[in-house]
Length: 279
Image (spheres, rainbow, N blue to C red):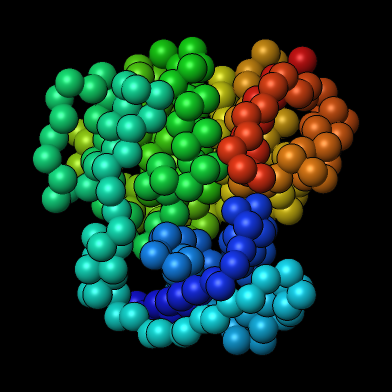
């Protein structure tokens, strides 16, 4: 498989503006983002790339900031070289250490996660993944049945498993993510995660204690009714992949109609992660 890399460099840009641009790129299929010295690179699989969609997206920002960008085709075998340049180990909440296979182990941390992204979103570096990991570290996950939607690399399910979760299902509609989640579970010696490739129709009809969904606002709004069906009474949902305004209110309103109540939220930059509970 081939990929398209779009590398942006900015003359002047605010952090929230970059976040907005990344969110819009995610809406048109870009699924991996890596910081560079002067901006960031966004990646999308070759078959999903549409130049017109990119042009239309960038048109929204033409009066907001100045930028340049280049578009490059990348063969799959060159992907590891690309992300290795930028993937630094990450510490979450002082007790969770995320590293790649080529980084040294750090056994002093309570939880150590080894991740090989392979074009799948979710190394913990993006604000949404960081906040979701913080929630997983805070939540009572032991022996719980957990669904991880839009699982990417599987990092959230892996962390929940390391914290004693019972059975976990990790689902992504991108085959690269599905395969990455399976491989990363194996890298971490995890045997209680079932990875599935598909969308909401793929969700096993069980009674979940916890649902993790780090996707984007529009997909979340579409899938919330299914989450409500499979989440047990008193169960919790942790959402991310969207902004505080207007997204959080829209998601809260959609949940309220299905007897799922807002509890709290976290915010890093313009990105939000939120906790909900089914009545």
